[in-house]
Length: 236
Image (cartoon, rainbow, N blue to C red; front, side, top):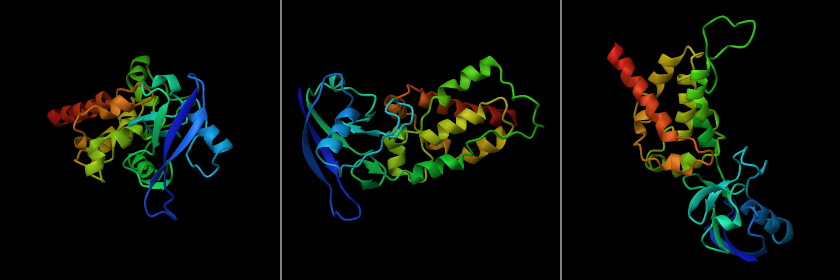
């Protein structure tokens, strides 16, 4: 079947304003959107720019807007869309466009670094691994599925009005360590995000959960952080 793609084109180095370019591709209903983009770049226009790597929903590189919804291009098939054979492809919102479908994710990863995304322990390192019980591992497991695709942050309406807000992805990663029984920096971690640019910036709108390609209950995890803070305040 013939599919028409209207793709956002913009080169920040030379263009004054963006445009949409139309491409026609022969595709099967079971082809991935990423397959079609690759076909366009390989066979029609080598200047088309977008990120991709594993093509299996693991790396998170190819998050973009497909027909108005944030998706991973490698995880959506032609048949998944009710628009039939017509597709509008755009870059992630919120972030500055570098070229075509590539956005500048430096602010995203800077916020991720702010929450200290690594285990902190003041206990002496054991001879073997730091053991974790099954119940605690199951509790934080959803957060472990995050692939840092930035979909949730791009969708979050709070990020659009407060550029200092850490965003759901960074706060989800904070939850992963705050709730980890092996981490001993819980108090300082909670204190660092106990503000309007941190966890209280979240207004529980669920958009982050709605677009997550790994089905992580992001909003629920952030709710746990709020509960942890309230519990600590009651315990003082």
